Structure formats: structure tokens, C-alpha cells
Amino acid sequence: MILLRMVLSFLKIQAAKIYYRRELDCLLINSLVAKQREECPEEAYDSVRGVFFEGSELYPTSGFREKDHIQISIINPNCIKAFFKLRKEDKKYKLV
Image (cartoon, rainbow, N blue to C red):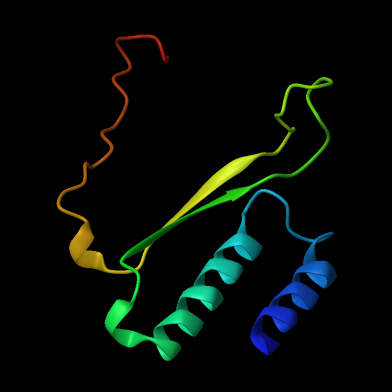
């Protein structure tokens, strides 16, 4: 609980400084995962998904806010089976 209080205190201090880089979300997830790994290493998480609700409502009763987002953290790199490499744009075609 002390670690969680420290993270939440840090979040309050830093909230005005960082908006879209989501460094605070990453810090929160990594801190909680590290704490769980310390307490029960045999049940360590491989991946975590967190939902963050931020900002004003888009419109009344919508349930969506301006900056809602989902943060995904892959802790165990063996969970990643493949990835793709972004290719350069082809100037012959319009950008989409």
C-alpha cells in the first residue's frame, strides 16, 4: 500500500506536466506489476491491460470522455510471437 500511495502522490504532482505521452500510466502499471511479482513471483503477470478514464464527457450520458484510453504492457517478451515493420510511404499514391 505504501508503494501505491507513493505512485498516486507522484501522479498528482506530475499530472499537469504530462498529458499524451502516458508516462504516468506506464509508471502505475509497472509499479503494480513489480509489487505483485515481489509478493508472488510464481504467479507473475505476462501482460497487463489498464483502462484509463480522463477528461470531460464527450456528451451527457455517453460514457466516453475526451482522453479515455487503454494502456497495454507486455511484461514477458515471449508473449510477442511476431511483429511487423512499418514500410515507407509510396509517393505515387495519396496518403490515407
